[in-house]
Length: 300
Length: 296
Image 1: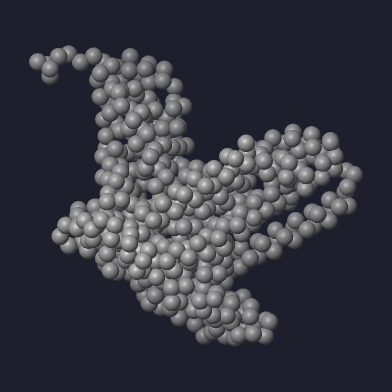
Image 2: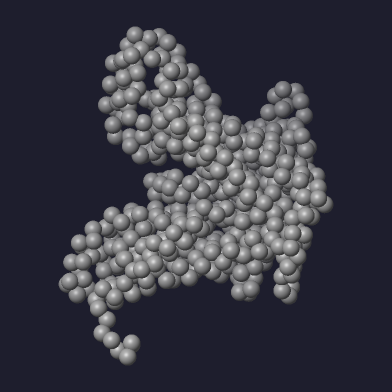
């Protein structure tokens, strides 16, 4: 399993070096070591238990979820029936399609627009550039709840309530995205860009064929981070979307929870459906996922 | 005359530079800068989405602090949530990071386990814990039965509701701050510990004299962002309790949402958002100032 924290390579050498210093108090060390494992294991059980509960409950018939004893392994295993029911109780396919459309549009748009702006701030020297960049940075640390009402009013005046545009357009650019892209673009050698200019390449061409390929890791990080935060977004969609046919997955799941409040097996099956894409993306893009989260420092 | 003058290559190049930034800047202007600038003004108006906003001066703020017990209660609930959650979160995430920074078996697996709830969306996590908290069918009931007691009314008793939300929040985010601390711990050069070991320092001394001072930047960062995010909690509360029972979990964001969405009272909701902003700003400045003086 690959590690989710960078900088592991030297750990073996470090361990060896440290071990040589610690021969003297080896018994105390041993007890301490056992204690560490006990604490970590107990903590791990607490962390994993809710997920085990979710899968276990999602696999049970309804009667079994109401038994006065807890059975980890269901007497009758019916995960697939429950998934099927959850899928058809609400227009889950519709929610998936809405979520996918919104998340893809936001991701593609944000990566392109932020890369363009980041390139502009990193590699051009027009007058007023620094003022504009400072303006961008000043919007970066603003808490969501401070701007949510005026933003709602803007979207209302554009006539975008109950319109997927309200979920896409305001998210197309973020100050963090521009900042991230600029930082990476600073590392692109200016000589390379100037050489292409002398060769007669047009500016858009330089951007597309020289600059973008050099910042691929940053593009990947911003894409994964954007996709995930759009996919999980709940508060803003809750404000601007009220029609069921426009709901995204989080809205749909919350709606499902309010409607089928006692069918725990189906509720947990629905939660599993909502969880699956997130987990898949995490497993595929662990590094970009963690990097995006630690860089942004924003957790809803 | 002006338009026909031959442009220099440098000018054309700069024009392209501006052109690259313009689309992003326009969107940012409309959806970030403009809302930010009008946020303050909207707080001085009365507006229900019909007609034009009416300027009413400080009336919203007067109402907030003199005639709205719900708002005062909400401030208290938000403060309790932040105070109950954050110190616990810092201790747990720093402790985990330090344990997982050691040479132990299955370290990567442990890290992954503690990080897993961070991956899960707030909505899904809240749904799962909603069933866990149920007094007769949830894990709550099964655990309490082990002690021979009935399940606790974790979400419907105002004694427990906020604590339940705090437990869920701790579970959900402890792995995130753990990762931030781990990154900070790995920035501390190993030679300091080796030198300390040669000098015969024990692990307590190493923690207070080396780890903690050198971890200060990461610690301040974690403290500030966790405080800011705890004042903006909404999703778990909206899904688990809708602010109830009887307002016991109605934090400020929930109250803002209710006034904006249910009562369509945009001006009043905006005034609350401004107060939230001021609180966050003061807390952030206080934390920065405190750590600057202790470091000096």
